[in-house]
Length: 341
Image (cartoon, rainbow, N blue to C red; front, side, top):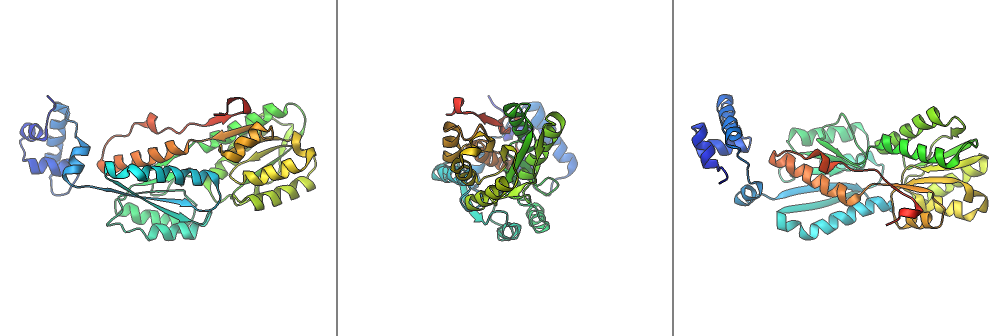
């Protein structure tokens, strides 16, 4: 028979109320008593039934997700996953609120964070845009003991508990090695298109990409990063201008979104069809570009896994339970035309 809280109270020689305070990390219990209760828990192998405890306390997880608005297909994928989970979230006493802010707008992100009522919200997940105001807003939530998870793009050194997403430096390494292998020994230039260098995921991908190209492919030279704001029209405009002004481009690394703009430019000029292209995120447009031979590889991350992982991490922090690290590892996926799902 599994040990109960009554067994723990008896073993530790304390009341049920004291065990409850220790389990819920509430104040008012002497450190020696806490140690005695925790020792009793360890000796008995007591495992708390979080679902039953939450049901008894009528606890509801109020989770806020802040994501960029706009045409970014991957962000819309995150939003779709959240909407699907909202349909059945009441079954596990979870309330999901989605707040959308303009992409790369740190002031709007900070404002959204400041708008959260710390007496209501239980946990927060956000796609981070770096700024002092964002850090201050996260610090306010941390001081109120609100768990915080960053999604896709991290903000290390801030008051966040966990980051959920791929290793973006490794993703940049992967993109560089793919391009280097596809291009082979011929010399040439590489065009790079990012959304914005204000977000850490794009900065880290560029950094990782440069490291491998410089170390292993001296025949290739990276051009300055173009910023397309993850907008197809802007991306298409800056890329078209770059390719017209910089002859000898043999490869292109699309670091962020805006792939529709890349596709329009490359498909509209036959001379560009030989450019090796590695892009991010498997969407309807990038999948078609792979099938058509316009893209050579797409680096992907599972949006559904990221949303589910963020929810598990927030709940674990709220409940004070352990995290299974392997379960929350977001893998870098590589798709070619040959292995499209």
